[in-house]
Amino acid sequence: MNGPYVIVGAGQAGLQIAESLRHEKYDGPITLLGAEAHAPYNRPPLSKQWLRERRSISTLYIRGPEAIQRRHIDLQLGCVVNAIDRDAQRVRCADGRSFAYGGLALATGARMRTLALPGAQLQGVHGLRTIDDAEHIIAAFERCAAQAAPVVVIGGGFIGLEVAATARKLGLEVTVLEGLERLMSRVVAPIVSEAAAQLHRSHGVRLEFGVRVTALRGVDGAVRAVHTADGQEYAAGCVIVGVGVDPEDALARAAGLDCDRGIIVDECARTADPLIVAAGDCCARRRSDGSLLRLESVQNAAEQGKSAAAALLGHARSFSAAPWFWSDQFDVKLQMVGLSAGYDQVVTRGDTVKPAFSAFYFRGAKLLAVDSLNRIPDHMVGRKLLDHGLSPSPEQAADLEFDLHRLFAAGC
Ligand code: FAD
Image 1 (cartoon, rainbow, N blue to C red):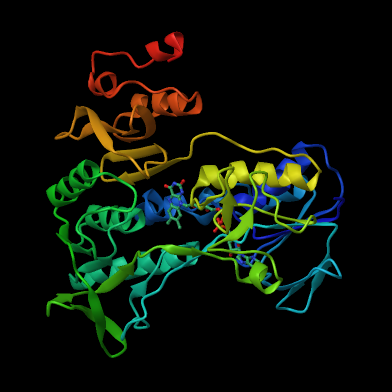
Image 2 (image 1 turned 30 degrees about the vertical axis):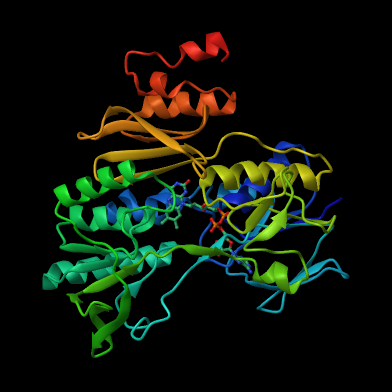
């Protein structure tokens, strides 16, 4: 497909598509449309050091506005696309503008789930997806600090736990309410959940499991407490809701593109419309076995963005690197590589108490994934093993004396 190219969504994937088009020597018009007021920025620090240190917004930029302009990418901010006219090959924006395309890329990311509960709209109840959300949370933490009021985090997933750790580092009283029986249970083995729980408790975070939140109670419009089904009330100066995201696929759906919890794309980021590609959190990727894979990570947005740019230029570029992700909680760096779903055995390598260990997930003799807590070398070798399709035996993985790099020479 030929330009002009229009990209909807000026985040990690959208910027990657624009820059990859230039990298591939496309020198025609590229328009990058973003709903937010900010140049494309890194979201991971929003729940980590940026939330604690609140440096200037420009420190978050993946690329500043001037650098984007130098690449002759027309960045339009505050521009919400609300319709795709596939017959006319045009996108329309809420402010009345419209842009013609020869090829279109959708990189609309994800939207936060909210609580459908009484009191969910009270002041002091926050989710975290954008810079603006983070700034509201910073202000809420300042109020909590001034009033010695506790923070309640709903959801013991990555973002909830990172925010809990940050709040605790700021000296705030923190309770995490988790509906299931352990932390990060969707993606990690019980041994990793347990290590995370120990870590948080050792820093004074209160953890409550199997809790169903029923309502938030306010005074003068501001949240003051969280009520749960077992009759408990948790005092709260602010509430952080970290209950996951949904793919932002409404625009694609309305335009008649196939969606199933995400815009369905093939392994080269192509939709069924030959003029439209998609990348990042908004997508569900159809794999060769027919299953759909949805990932929410910087690596996925970047790699799929490169595929999407190649597809716009008429090239098929799939990517096969094992998915990886990281999370910073207190002094622990948790790094994950691979997909552990369907594992039947987990072995650990290192010290589970410190913690400084890795969990190796196997199905039969096949290595599926590695989660590492303060074991960066294990993460790096895990990436290489998975990318090369190599598996240590569970005994080798558990044996600190066994150098996993030996497997590359052996090729087993
Ligand atoms: P986004 O970066 O969300 O960009 C999508 C953009 O599209 C948004 O700016 C949105 O406003 C815009 N948009 C949507 N609809 C429209 C429209 N109709 N018109 C115009 N613009 C539109 N990943 C990791 O790998 N490691 C981490 O440690 C990590 N930590 C995270 C911490 C936080 C707090 C958050 C929120 C995310 C974190 N992630 C992390 C996830 C990672 O940031 C995302 O996977 C990544 O940003 C996805 O990129 P994207 O381009 O698909 O979506």
